[in-house]
Image 1 (tube, rainbow, N blue to C red):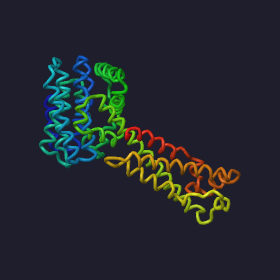
Image 2: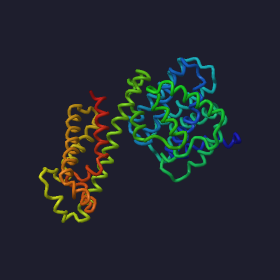
Image 3: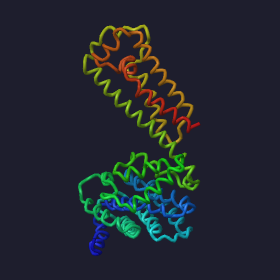
Image 4: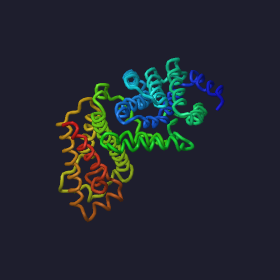
Length: 371
């Protein structure tokens, strides 16, 4: 790439949207992150976590450019700058890799989602791109390829659906393998980051909401080190799993209810109506505790005793459903399928208990962190 063309690229960021400028900076930072593997092990352990924090913050502001997200980015930028200043790093490429992450975090700290970048967002993003090029000259063509895509009419997060490298670099792959081996050496500490980076590398980022929540972990937690952050991430993942499983069950029950009242719903088979076992009132027996569990999962300070009570009620709902169908073993399964009434009584849960069981299992795993 001609130097003039590269200067044009950097200067153009002030004319791009803030999301596009930040995406270019983030992809540049992610692309050269494996260069950090060149650092001696003692320095690597001290630098890696602040570097990762500075690199993940773009996810928070892209999803929600709130004051909280910008503050997290600002803190991450200050942290990686402080760490860099306190370590004597002989390797120029490593210093530039850290500078790339710092530029990215600073750009994110000014981000408000404007259609035309502010000077602060664009200039910090330009700093990141320039540093990335210095960290790895072979990344230059990839940076330029990203720039070409910036004008495409896509959602901001879609910029990350492309692999970081269109043509794998043997030199960078060697560094990435070294970094991966470091992560594998302590899976209880680094597993999230290993999968997180691999997702970007192949163009399939991890769940964005999960990334946002990790990026927003308070500064005082990050300051307690790798093991502590690994525990906080595990708690977030457990909570996120509860939310996801509830969402799946809610969608299934909504679909089942529509089927119940849309296909033969006014005249269900007699065998389904008459049962000696008391059945739940439509979906209330499951829907209410499921909704309450979501409220707890979204609360700033969930109540572990309340969560336990909710899970007990969901287990009871599943048990009642199974008992109800067992009492109708000769007819219930066939009629439940024929009439499309899985939301009535226990038909749905007897035929498809996995989604309710998944909610319960996720809730129990999350509860461990609340005790």
